[in-house]
Image (cartoon, rainbow, N blue to C red):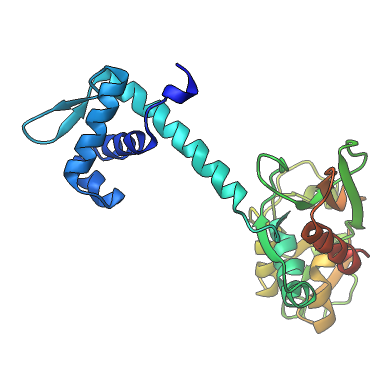
Length: 288
């Protein structure tokens, strides 16, 4: 079948909506036409393909086996057209940045007013996740990730800051204890664990250590701020709380982390101006 002999788009649309609702009346309401117009378009399509797509029942309709198979493919085709159109009309100045949840909470969100003021014409869309991003599949322009070099040639990456880990707690939990604490003192305090599992390395232990467990560092830090225990986090994430006295540094980590925080993006043939603007702002404000 040549492309010129494809069924009329209106007939395909009426069939897809009617098949999705299994009801001509509901299809007419969605399409904003009369029920008779939907029925006419469906008949036109059936005449075009030479196959009955619906069974007309005393009450309503039902798809024939051929109609059900055809509906699946037609729906997929409309979804593809919808996605292509959405990408086409996406605002050219929209930039999507994917960052880790703790980075979003502790660094990006507090600095959003400054970023928006510096780049008023850019719509920044944020995705907070630890998952590795596929720039094309996930439609992501820039990422911040805890990772390490080297990087593939297709990826442009810049070190933002080293992951300097410190143990922190609320001053209300520590009381008048002398800082920094030694390991034996620290073991007597409640420990707050996150998904990175730093405490066994901190103590040089392979066994399970007691304490509350959180799936994100930011939650462990919230618990530390509430005086519920001691958390381990990157200094960059707790610097503001250390400066205001909401948290105190118990001691530095006793081991070297294997990864650091990088800003990365795919090397495009011709990067958009908005992406370049956000990229440059991030490097200027987040690089230590």
